[in-house]
Structure formats: C-alpha cells, structure tokens
Image (cartoon, rainbow over all chains, first blue to last red; front, side, top):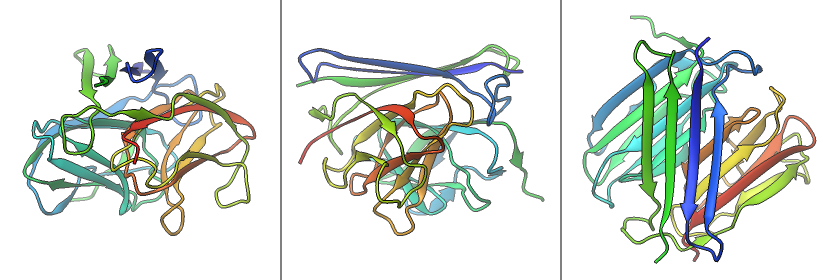
Length: 137
Length: 139
C-alpha cells in the first residue's frame, strides 16, 4: 500500500493571539484506515479564457475515495478560475490560490470542470484516488 | 495589514517511483487585489448531530451567504477517527442542496468558496465533531 500524507497550515496575525492551525491526514481508501490511496493523476495545464473544460476527464467511481488538489499559478491577482463539479460551483481560485478537497464523485456525471477568467491561467492539479473508469477510445 | 497564509504539503515515498514532495503556500487576499484578508470567524469546534440535509435542525452552518465579500476561504476538518463516519458539506442556497464534498474520518479540506452561497454540514453518525474556520473580508 502507498502512504501519502496531506497537511495544511494556516497562519495569521489577524487576531490578538496569532492563528496557527495545522491538520494532517493520511490519504486512505474509502471506509478504511488501513489501506492508502495508490493512484494519481498529476498535471500542469494552461487554460485559455472563455470555454469550460473538463479537468478530470476520467470518471472517478462514486464509492471510492478521491482527493483533489488544484492551484492557480497565475500571477495576476485579477485572473481566476471557476471550479465546478457536476455543473455546481464549488470553488473560485484567484492567482496564487489553491484548494484541496476530498472530492465527492457521487454519480457518473460528477466530473470536475474549470473555466478560466481574465486571461490564460496556468493550473496545476492532482487527483489522488483509488480507481477511475477510463473512457473508452 | 494582517498577513494570512495557507500552506499545503503532499508527501509520499512510495506512491511513485520518485518521491512525491509537493508544497505550496498562498497569501489570502481580498478578491482581485493584493490586500490581505481582514476578518475571520475564528476556529470553531462543533458536533454535527443531523444525519441528513434538509431536516429541521442539527446541521451546522459553516458559512452564511454574503456574510463575507466575494471569496471566503473555508477550512474544515472531520475530527472523527472511525472510517466511514463522514461529514457532508452541501450548498444550502442552490436548489436541490447539491453536495460540495465529503470528509471521511480525519479528512480535511481548504477551499476558496463562492461567497454568495450558504454552506452547511451533516454527518453519517450523530454526533460527529468537526472544526472549521472561515477567513475573508466582512461586508
């Protein structure tokens, strides 16, 4: 079994007491604490403004675990990408922003799509998962 | 001006032939600017007692639509340690209350959200503890 960990740290001086929140998890297959996710799709793409594109082309299986990471590498703070799942808005990443979620691929149509706004955005993404249904040629 | 950062690391020594060591940091800013965020809900810890969306009570409201301007950043973690005891985050504003994502035991998420939607959480097991925080710009 592969062992993959994901950790987040949030730091801020917004409050009188500094915020320092850290969380870490080992990325597991669905319904177990003993078997780690063992497949990954990892890419960097430039996405032209305008059209909506499927970021996740394969169909992850609903009952299996998937962790999605997306980062917008644009350096223009006015550029952003809108992220949708099954045509529902889930996130909006301006230049420099990232997201990490345990994706909920609850049916076959729950693909992840992305729209670039303001100009061409360079996107880095990773899907760490335990199985997808490959699209037939 | 306050400075707020969010850092991510993803590591594995055996998922790929080479070691996976991904790390990134972003400074949380107000929408479309380089000005740092100014407001936060602070860190909350609550028990989710509802096991369905749309029931009368028991869901936890993570964020109320339009509470913050544009992009609020949500951090949430499922504090339960039993596999299968999930937290479901859903959009309570859009028709049908579509699911946004689900957190199995120990899972966490960080996402710049759409600020015009209310987000709530329910669980598979009553109760399931979560911690969460929203950071952004109040309006």
